[in-house]
Image 1 (tube, helix red, strand yellow):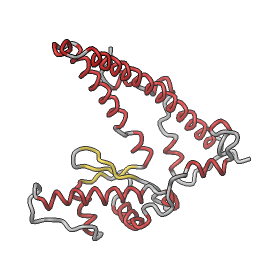
Image 2: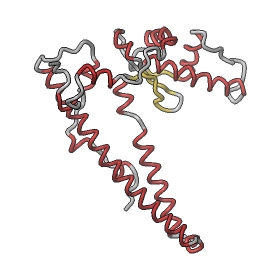
Image 3: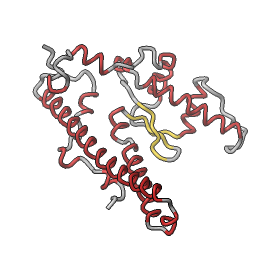
Image 4: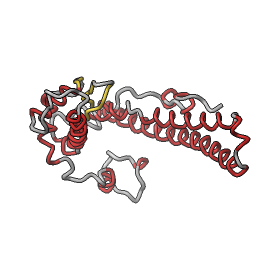
Length: 243
């Protein structure tokens, strides 16, 4: 039996081989293939951990023949607006190639180019990009904003002008937001606890010599493990509470 995949993390009916197939399902073998050389050229010039400006990124793409820079045009010109679209296109495809599983065969491994702040970008390993994603904050902000808008309406004079059925609908919507918030907190906490359990098992196997990392990916995965009771913030903690 392949002990890399304990029975606890996949159904009994799913073999280790099928588990690997399921984990990579939907990953096209040729995804980002035409940009593979571009991804290798980029990481050679900007190793993981490098911070660069959008101007440097534009210069790199220009050197690679991806697009030309409208150097004699002002930054608010149509030419520069078009460049923003081209930069987005090439950066998206660069990241597709950089994140493809075939890059595990390269010594540099996978990476992603993320915006750090303003016009500054950073070349990050995938685990860091995932850990620092703004999605949870964006969801929390959305929930808080919609709740605040409804609460303001309910306490305004306009509330009395609403037909009875609209008031009922608004109250139902208010309750749905509350339910959605609680559901997200429960599911997020469950996913985080499972991930920490997985990290802990992998680290224990590495320390016991049962798993020998080929590169730094596994060690990075197991860095900074925080006990579940200390690691999670509820949506109420990351945004204004509904109460």
